[in-house]
Amino acid sequence: MRGNGAIWALGTMSGTSLDGVDAALLLTDGEEIAGFGESGYRPYSEAERAVIAAGLGRWPGEVGVLDAAEVVETAHAELMSGIAGAELCGFHGQTLAHDPAGRGTHQAGDGGVLAEVLGLPVVWDFRSSDVTMGGQGAPLAPFFHFALARLIGADRPVAFLNLGGVGNLTWIDPAARAPEAPGALLAFDTGPANAPIDDLMRRRRGLSRDEGGALAATGTVDEEIFAAFLDHGYFLKIPPKSLDRNDFHAGLSAVERLSDADAAATLTAAAAAAVARGAEHFPAPASRLLVGGGGRHNPVMMAMIAAQLDCPVEPVEAAGLDGDMLEAQAFAHLAVRVLRGLPTSAPGTTGVRAAVGGGRISRPGA
Image (tube, rainbow, N blue to C red; front, side, top):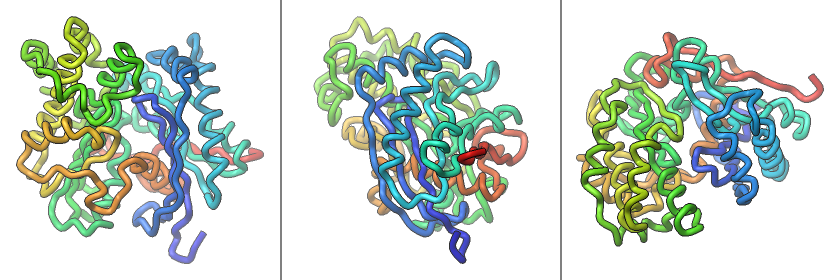
């Protein structure tokens, strides 16, 4: 621990796209960001991805869950053990099921196992407390986005968009006194983003993604499927709100009758339109939209989003940030907040009844 209260925390993220694990060091006191450190990525093999995919939609005790957890723990341990300097770890785990209005939320992986392997305290199970208190349990990165808005010197409302397997937006008023203050943040999942496109590419072409949106660029959007997508009841819900990876699966499965290119174009247009529909909920116009996650590398998707918004749409690198590691850095930041007893979500981010601190801490030898 340093005199200013900042510590080096190692955060991790394994997202709904099932591509692999990100890990990043962050120097923070849980309120302000004091520095960025080493980062790394460990991809899942096709065999590992298949094991995790077999566990999607399943809950503790069900078939395949322990196998998925073992893959998640092993991959994280391999990556995290190769990054030195951490004093604390934030372990998100792999979301297998998310049903906040029903059974709750389920992230595979045991932070206690990692604490023993790494010999460091590990903060994990970030979402359960929020769900217990009536929240959606997601998204959780907004408190970190608030710190980033302060770091980059934003003086007007700004928005962060994560284009992972699912898209999520955070609208920020940087003038607010703290992230949990009323009106400081509004955050929610927009809709499917990369996950349906990635699944299509694996199924049709044996590829992990539509690299650079190249396939979508050659296709034509199916207007019937696109219109049906926009009629989904999710878009009428007032945020905060969140999604499971496959919540739009039934409607988007209609692209199976399309050619590869038209299917990719339609799914890409759907992801972009979901963001535009989400921006309609902002309390005030955003001065800029900063985009992280793999989708920012897809110029077709980025252009579709920009064409529907009235503010600059830029990758987070335009603000000096690392779009590949933002989610992992977020869980480093949240881990320190948990350690300090600070809230990690609030009514404006997850719909929880009051600001709440999530996460539990596992210590080696405990």
